[in-house]
Image 1 (cartoon, helix red, strand yellow):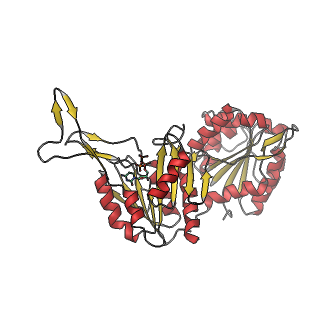
Image 2: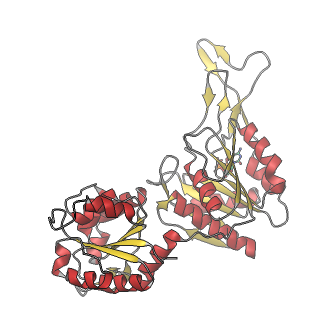
Length: 398
Ligand code: CTP
């Protein structure tokens, strides 16, 4: 899978830089065309000749090196790369990358790259746990970087804690994962809902919510990539349908109920990631709104609970997943929903959590099933979608 891939390995000035030589050597053995780029501080830890001997290419260190052929080297190689891995990545490099600073060859190339970007931080535990470093890593995650968590152990400074560069096989696995196209959901029919519903008060006014649809779309995208046949029932959102996904666009909770109930008998999995409005205005034959003394009164009635309907009509072997938004007692309230709606799994969100919820690209969810609770860390919605699909796939096997 890694064979013939062009991999750029960035090396920054940390003691773990000596391990990068082994990483590069192993990648060359895997059949990769490896190019290396070092920061000036990395030169204090390891000699570029080591990398040049291992890769057969000049190790890039300086944007203003006049011995190069006249092409814009950082752009050319960054554009050609299939993946870019910085290992070890110091707090300094993480700080620069997360702020768009490009003041040397490595940080410039990172900014110019158009491929999966992987960062493997390695530093002293206190530095790693510093909230500024953590915020910078979160920012990188939001921008699509893959962060390989450092390992725990005895560090060069003799402190014991998180901050070690992970073992080389872990780093190589992180590269392999970006090229992997798992097809484990092939033949599975997934029905997924996303986005808000719009409940009309009259031809002009409506009630809706802040759902952006990003979580449901991430699930549809991840499942389609893994080979599932995906039907996405979507409220009005500003997102393109993911590649290979059939999209049914709806407006109201009633439309969503109709679209889902019609397709439910054929689905192997239903995931209700939509933010369905719980209430809709009562529509009178003559008038919808009661106006009195300049005040407007809107009478609301409950919408049909689509998830509950699906739970009541669940077929043998079908898996039903709901999402929950809770302000308090996340686990307890989600468990109640799991039982009352006869679902197999609930993906619970805490509404007060920063970086999680409606408009963000990241989410922190807790997966709750009858016999298991799995708390996920803050991650991109696409990563969270993949883990949710893993969990559902393992339930189907049982
Ligand atoms: N849901 C649904 N139909 C509705 C309302 C909600 O299918 N009319 C689904 C949502 O898509 C979600 C799950 O039910 O997957 C839970 O939604 P949530 O709003 O958290 O729960 P409610 O049952 O509406 O309860 P409450 O708002 O009181 O917490």
